[in-house]
Amino acid sequence: MTGGPEVPGRVEITARALTSCARAVAAEHLGAPARRVRVTLGDHQGSLALDITGPMAAADDLVGRATTSATAVRDRVGELTGRRVGSAHIELTGIVREHETRVR
Image (tube, rainbow, N blue to C red; front, side, top):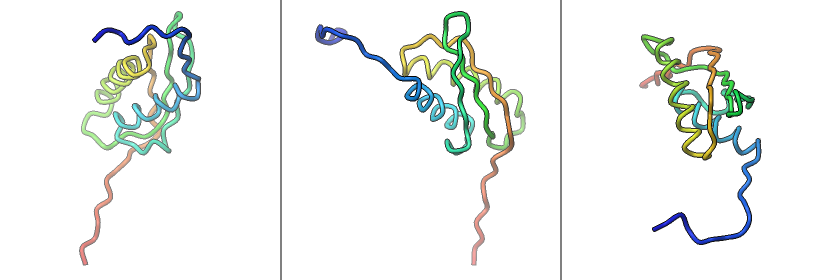
């Protein structure tokens, strides 16, 4: 199968849709609820830049995990949107811990 039928026109992805996509991807990689993650779009030398702010799931090596997450988010958002993502900056605002349920 090729790239699909020839259809005149173009596809536009709004900034709001890009932001929502990036928020969902970032929340998944950070292990945090999407409602607690904020994403701002910007420009990085002609490519899309992501500024991500939110908590991260507890881990032994937070810095290493944040660095790995930034790369993974950048790559995945690029795959999903078809845009070049030049950078992803993560600012951690807290730790998300799993709540232990009480057994009665």
